[in-house]
Image (tube, rainbow, N blue to C red; front, side, top):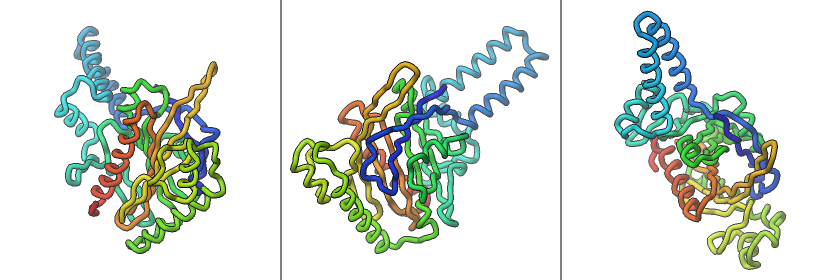
Length: 317
């Protein structure tokens, strides 16, 4: 099954505005270990069945196996216990837990010489090793950032009937700081510098016509995000902050084309900077916007993902 891949062309080094010229490419969502295992199992079944099973028995066996695989992929028709059992068989010893949060060793990556783990959620896949994924998802990103994870909520994509990837997270390692260890003071200074940069860019680029009210336009330009009453497409506003993180929220319109027509989808997203074992990590999450509740959903998921990220790496939240 092929899905359209949503990649904006904004430069993450200048992340304040990126509304125009959304680029969409085609890619296949697949779970490589599952596909490989299914293919191997099918070959073995064919070979054994030629000697031991009648054609009808063979067909029944293959149908049953295929149906179980389909159920496991979609999450439909399996109880939670059955899903976990199938998941353990699929992932084997690679599936680990720290507390109640799972992670996969094959999803780990390095920041400098430090190896970090990424949380694993049921129904999510990582496209980082899929051919062309790094080039596709890195397009328009900061060239100084290394893409370390392309995490797609496959269950959400399929359940929503979407023809494009409408819920995913990108994990980035800022290479300027890959070999740096941040103290709390260092990170406080980094957040202050980031805010100042954002405000400087707003003063240069913010367009009055993009804001519903003049008051919001002024609040935005001078960094009073908490006082804003509405959003403006393509602009990032500060959503949350703590000693260990800073998160921005944004909205934008995503455009994709087929041979006959152009499609437009409203999207919401977050961009988070946070520390994991004193290493700076950046995560961008994007989700299709269908109702006002999706704003709280993506903010809640971003908080959960950040906290789980810290947890599976043995750090305090």
